[in-house]
Length: 95
Image 1 (cartoon, rainbow, N blue to C red):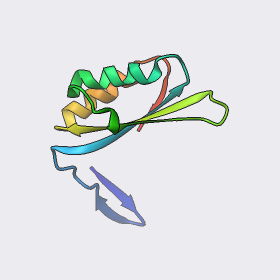
Image 2 (cartoon, rainbow, N blue to C red):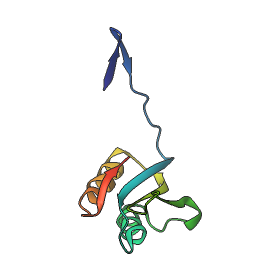
Image 3 (cartoon, helix red, strand yellow):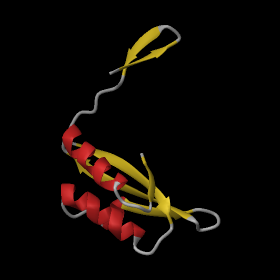
Image 4 (cartoon, rainbow, N blue to C red):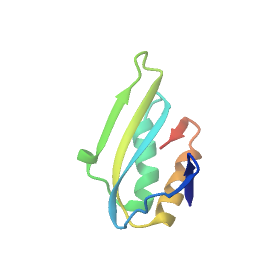
């Protein structure tokens, strides 16, 4: 895939797998949000080291973001992870 900027076409950088890949999940601050998104990802990756998971709440605690770094094996794995995360009702955005 390419991106056109100021009439110049630039190729998107290609990811070389396997690699460490950060995933940010933002959603409503509901009970067990972290556990829910982590378990969905672990279905595709196996157990994730707790040191590779960080959480941040919004100022009013209405939203929460969970950052999880995984050992990504390929595009197909990432696509399946993103699809599963987007099916969670409380998830609003996956980056």
